[in-house]
Length: 160
Length: 316
Length: 118
Image (tube, rainbow over all chains, first blue to last red; front, top):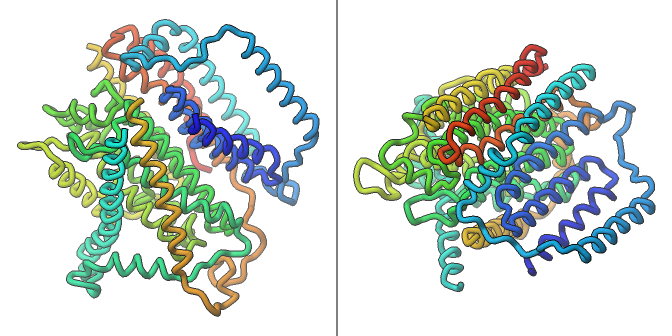
């Protein structure tokens, strides 16, 4: 349990850093740290595949993408773009409300919160779920990714 | 509980000492070989054959003046070398040096390696940006773009290995090679992996991030003293790890013609590293557009073809 | 999950080692009078001109975007690869279809010159 707090407290601090930092680049860096720490929480919940994929995709990919995006937009208007987190109060109230709702529903639901036993053959269990049970969503996903690739190229080319 | 913890600490100590020594002597080996390739001696003043040179370098780097630029973003500027150093050492935790000597045999070790690799992209970006210097920033962004482009080719090559071994654990991958090294059935994947490895370690012919003639030293231009040493040592530990990985993934790890053991592992790793040093001092540098085009237009299709062939073979 | 305890210990020791080395370097470093012009960024011996935070080319952004999409594809391949033997032909055909659809994206990117640098 103490490991959870060891991860969770810096996680919340970094998340606050993302929102409160004036500098967009710093925000991105804090976001990366937040995502790595979230991945560690996944590991604590025995979701190792998800945890590593999270680090790989989000810190390696998304954080890099954001940095490039910042570099691309920098100085278009003649000065560094700073983040003005307007409506801090409203945001704080909204997130508190979400937190309370979450507490309320999780408290009243009949969900089983115990960490599931590790499947005997994780790879097989995962493969079966992904490629047999949920085969249709999986294939639809490829079309979605295709659309995303084409969309990305169209948008980026217009930008040139 | 106390017993395994003690054992882990002991192994961690051995791995650290080994990796740092390996990195230090890789630097010397590189300089020595470079010397011979260019018909000169290389370092030969400190100790016999220059064998104490790494020690002298380490002491020098430790005692250097600490320069932190007022323009740099101090916190992030100091964090970058730490992240690089940590990210360089982390992959060693899953490498099986012999059948029994490894720190952890993760069931998803291959993904762990890729994930940790992406952490170093992070450190490079951080170092480049926080120095607030043009060369560093250009080098950092270039480096990130390059690492990201070759990561896909590398991941696709790794899928081929996972297909053959039906596992992502490095120990199981080596065990699957007892009778036949993956080098032979995965020859396409091997070539893709090796080329991507050159790019991921930022070495010639793909050392664009620190192309001296245009970028001074790339993302660590503004780092000096021990902060620079972290980048430098990290680079050579990374190189050592690539040598280990090629051995584990394609050359049968600790297996040899007779009597399996760590000696085979280190022999093969040394040969791979020698090859990488040889290439570095033989080939000129690619241009950046050639480098990017090569990954996206050649390596990725080849890796996909390799996957198709391998999975056809496995599904049969 | 037994393998994560050694991994955790290793990670903690790694971080401590990196911090320790940095700390030792800070204690041992040379102090004393120094030249103020050491404390400027390197710019071929000239005084640095303007800021380093310049605008970068859109090519970087495009590369990162295409990377993420192909990375997602590659990540789906891993669980597939290790269960292919057990799942057989069905999984093979399924993944071939998946990769082929994404390969269309690659062809599109190729045709539009998105894989060209600059």
